[in-house]
Image 1: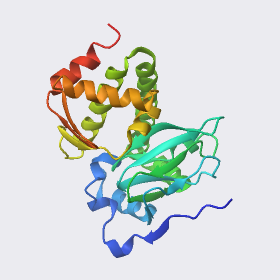
Image 2: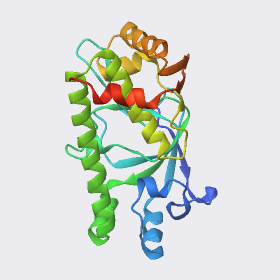
Image 3: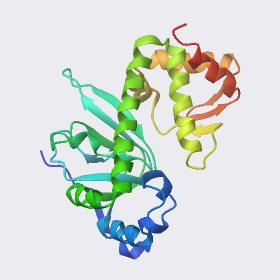
Amino acid sequence: MTHAMPAVIPIEPFKVACSNCNLRELCLPVGMSNEQMERLDGLVNTRHNVAKGESLFHAGDHFTSLYAVRTGFFKTCVSSEDGRDQVTGFQMAGELLGLDGIGTERHTCDAVALEDAQVCVIPFQQLEELSRELTDLQRHFHRIMSREIVREHGVMLLLGSMRAEERVAAFLLNLTQRLKSRGFSSHSVLLRMTREEIGSYLGLKLETVSRAFSKLQEDGVLQVRQRQIDVLDPEALQKLVNGAGC
C-alpha cells in the first residue's frame, strides 16, 4: 500500500527563515552568529503541509530527516498486535518529530497531524555534518534527545504509580506548561486530541478519562466544555501531581 506524501513547499516564497522565525528560541540554540544562522537556513530549505488526519511518516519508513513543527499539533503512535493504535506522544509547534528513526534509520512510529499543520524539514545527514562544525548546534540537539528520554521516563513513572485523576492532572500540567513556553495561556487550552487518544497515551479507558475530567470539574479544579479546558485552580492541579503515589 502506498501513502501519499504531504505537500512539499519551497521555503523561499515565505521569506521566513530560521534566523527570523518566531519559534527560533524553542527549536534552535540561542546565541548562534549570523553566519551560523545563514548556514542553518541553507540546510532547512523545504516545508511540508500536513492536513488533519494525514501522516507525516509511518513506522517502517526510511529515516532521512527530522521535522520541526512550525504550526499545528501531531500525535505519534504505534500499532499493537491486536491492531489498535497506542499513542506514544503529542507534539506541538517548536518541537521535533522523527528522533525515533536515528538509531535504526527506520521510523518506529506513525506521526499523524491532529489539525492542519506545517513542518520544516531538516535533512539529518547534513545536520550531522553541520553539527560537527557548530558545537552549539550539536549540544542543543543532544539536549533535545536527552529531554525526550527524560519525558519517556516520566510517562513510565506516571503510568506505574498514579491514579487516573492524577494521570490526567499530570497530562494537563505538562501540556499547559509547554503551551506557556510558547506564549499561550497556561490556564485555558483547546485540546486537539480526543479523550480516547488521551486515554491511549495515559493507559486509561475512554470512560475513565471522562470520569477523571468530570471529577476535576466537580472539585472546582477545571471547567470543561467539550475540548475547551480552563484550569480554575492550578495549585490544586499541581498538588494532585505532587501527592501522587504518597
